[in-house]
Length: 255
Image (cartoon, rainbow, N blue to C red; front, top):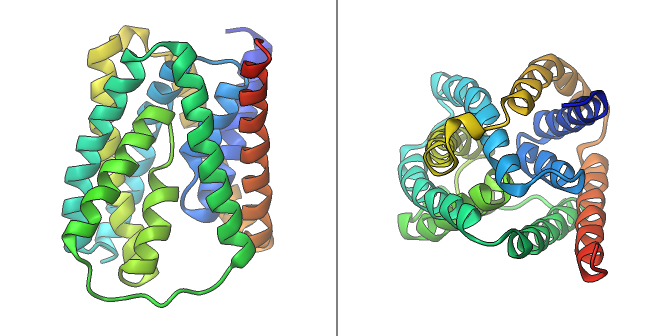
């Protein structure tokens, strides 16, 4: 890896950690969008991000568990169906032709960017219901797991808003999603190891993302107190939409 690529990954990892630390979600979606836009292959991007996220999600999930922020009626079905969707997504990402994968990922993130943008523009508080029906979590886990593996991110941005509308109090929604994310991310990572070989994982990217994440974690916590989450959410939504429209336009132009 040359110096320019290393510097780009450091910047991407820093911005992604800033987003993830501020919102509690969006790390994978932001880093994947930027890495793919920078020219890295989607399969390697998703494999790298999930490998790095195993460590982050373990620490975060255990912390929430110890603090009593996990609801079993959310955690168990979300984990089971998230893992199932994640394995299917990883297999699909490796199996499909690259020319088909890139526009599909761009479309997925474009839609997620629109959802994120609308969410923070409206910025309305939702009434939360205490009862969670498992059958409603089944499609959520499958879709979120699939999108997360296939595109390199999307677990938090998909699960958290939906469950905060139809689930329990925010801290228990976030805690349940974070703990489930560890198991989903771990299985997705193992699936990539089996499909493409652990020796083909770009460990240089993984190491940079992990190191930058550790360094940026305190700064992101401080940043979340100083900057309006609504403003940052709108800014990130616009960035994700713009980048993925650019990817789609470049493909239509034959670049």
